[in-house]
Image 1 (cartoon, helix red, strand yellow):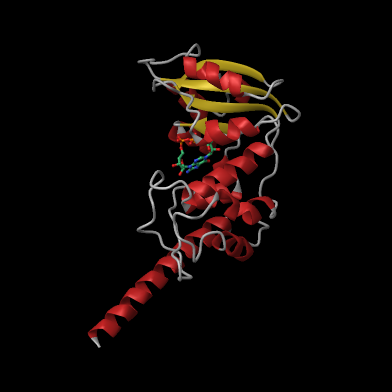
Image 2: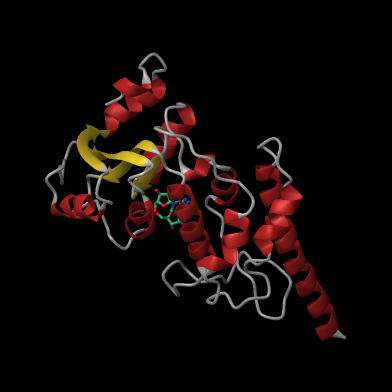
Amino acid sequence: FVIAVLAIVLGLTLRQKTNTFKTTFIARCERFKGYDCENIWVAFEQAYVGQDACNVPMEAYDHLVTNMGLFKPACNRMMFWSKTKDVVHDFTKKRDCFLTLEDTILGSVLDSLTWCGKEGSSDTFTTGCPEWNYCENNPVRSFWKSASSAFADVACGNVTAMLNGSIPTPFHPASIFGSIEVKRLNSTRTRSLNVVLVTQKNMLTNCTNASLKELEKALDEGIKYNCKEVTESQIQDCSSNEDIPCGACW
Ligand code: C8R
């Protein structure tokens, strides 16, 4: 009897988990008008539910990410980043100059969430899921790989990337930016990649950094490369001052 009660309580707790996660998903989704959020949820969930949490490849999200028309090109306004999440989003929240993956419906809905499934269960779990590096094919990592591919595929015109000038290696070939996005930029659509190297007063790196030479080499031939060192306070000034035109921020 005690076991039965425990099983029911546990069952309800897990059910609660799915419901809370789904509630967040739908509520965030509904901030975007004109989408069928229930339909997007079903396409999302089928990628990982009932699967081993280390056995969800990025292709599991193909249907969600490529068939539902959730990524639209925004030429000259696309913003990539690596190790600069907070500065970038502080800026994009306040100004309309650039569009990051988190400004698209899927990126916005799933930003900072954790989820996974379990074999033999139709629930979504938010605890006990593998960490980012625990196994390659975990549901969260595979999602960001898949969404980042789709986001980079629609990039066009002049694109921007904010990289971190306060670390020794601003460009990591193994990051999502390095391993997925840079490789998918295509010279027939993308004219240039403009690196904004975000520096602080104690500048550790500048545009001559060896890792940035690697970035330049990794670009599809025909895409122009530029790099500019910009202080974090210059970016913050532009965030908080609407009178500075986007093109004059740096
Ligand atoms: N991108 C990747 N990871 C993202 C993300 C996103 O948009 N949004 C979130 N919240 N995350 P990093 P990177 C989470 O190492 O690997 C796209 C992931 O859970 O600083 O080069 C985006 O378009 C993961 O743990 O950067 C951007 O251009 C970290 O943030 C690159 O890929 C990854 O952060 C950034 O990926």
